[in-house]
Image (tube, rainbow, N blue to C red; front, side, top):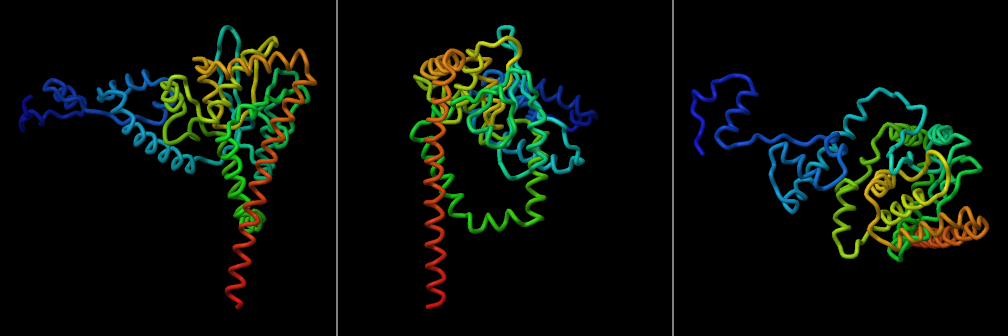
Length: 334
């Protein structure tokens, strides 16, 4: 492999440099963009994309680089999104996928109850009556949904790890509530939250995933025998299989948390590698039409478990916070 001479590099345009380097065995690589990474949805496609950019590397070598590229892409995206003019979409965008002649439309949202009345109104406006609607469990406690929208008991899929996460998240909320409750009443902070919520309407759902894109995390977990999904992935897989098994005519729509949206699209396209999830979703989808009362009880039972878990975590955190604050005051006074 020869080195370039002074005469060689005195050729001019960048395209000519690229061709010259290629002739002597070098490929000038290009960084992947945010749009590049979210335009595909498999590891094989990602390997091909890196090869086209000048990186012929194995999957094992690719992953550390992908983490760096994905972090850079997300950082650049979130930086530039703040430079956009304040144009608010009038509805929630959807991820659409056609499978076996059926149109599936997935709407991902941030379901924070008291953060933005305007955002919640836009979400509720998106959900038109008369269509085939499903929604993630407890979504009706945040948004005004059509009466015919069916709640999917995806919390039924929660494992002890999933319940532990709900408990710890709620415990953190309880512990920080003496600060967060007064802060939420601050007008400047409320405006900041409102702007953040509204700007998310124009944000690709994949941007919520880190440290890797959703499809990469799913496929890596599917390499286990049997496939071992995270709690969120398992619920997304269940939601996708429920949509498929749900016996209705026409397009199917679903309202879910933003992180679930790209995962559901993936599972609709490529299927679920855990038979227990598929069997549960098919059984419950059939139950929703054949025995609505039994299906409603299934929803209530799984919802009650998560409510009790979250409540216990919140008050546990609040108790610890109050004890810490009380001890600090006592130490200061005495």
